[in-house]
Image 1 (cartoon, rainbow, N blue to C red):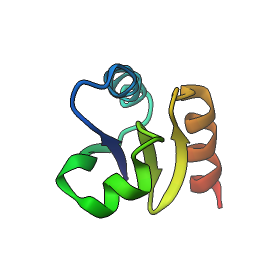
Image 2 (image 1 turned 30 degrees about the vertical axis):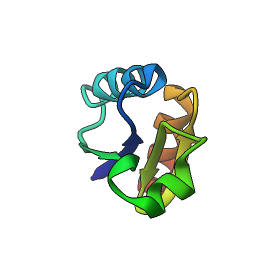
Image 3 (image 1 turned 90 degrees about the vertical axis):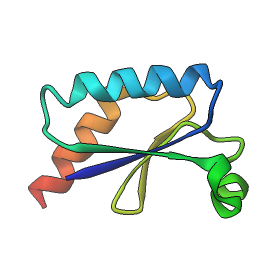
Length: 81
């Protein structure tokens, strides 16, 4: 399982989201892929005001202030289907 974390440099919320997701990895094994939105114009346009953004298989699981419980619940729902 892979989660994508869209971030940018000098983003305190992004650093907080990364820490939370790393804690979640202790409970649910997944690969965390970080993507800096400033490396791609399309990402900057799409996520510029929303970061950090957490996605799983194209589904946005959270953005802005990340709520770890909600992400955890959604991952459990996805894998029960």
